[in-house]
Image (cartoon, rainbow, N blue to C red; front, side, top):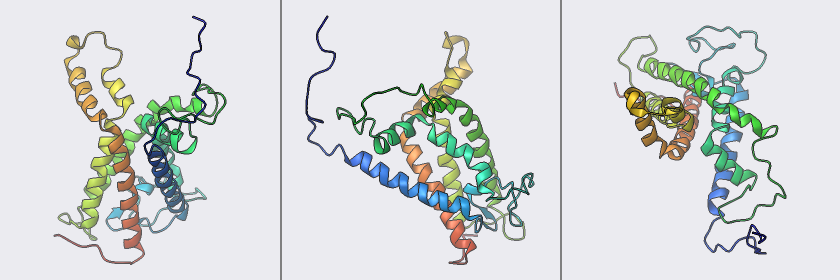
Length: 257
């Protein structure tokens, strides 16, 4: 009963594999995405190329270029980029995501950098103090993320129109937006909060067959939540970059029909 609670090992770790590779790659990729997203969010330009709207600016509720606002401009007097009005919701959803917490805790805070590797921090307070206690509002960001995913789905439908507003258009941008919205939905619906919302706090699944089926489906998606998190992160950046290149006139959108 009076023995030590942890093994007295002086070495930082006894692991001999490349345990540092995962946090290192995560650090580089996340940092690159943050730099790119920050630049694009504050740019306030080149986010719309008919009929494509960048997901960073959707829905466009500020002073937006012609054709980019499908839900009006209630924040027309906002002095900064229109992207800053909406990005807080998908960004908050990702920052408080259980998978992303593990990823950036290890990569940026080294808490810990890997399993069976000592961390440099002298004490651990968990997510009980500011600012980490704000992680507990993840579920509310999930509700907002669902609304954003619905808007992105609407944008994808509009991407099947041409410059004159006629239906029947399909270009490379349409394909990219379609792939992006599918990945966004997979990431959103595979969320741990979604799994709890569909089947949490139920004592008898037999009395709630519909919720049980939803919980089962979400549970299957949840096993690949980390994969969807990465893919959707890349797809959002790729679509935004593609729209930027079209808007700047770098090339024309290849048309399929």
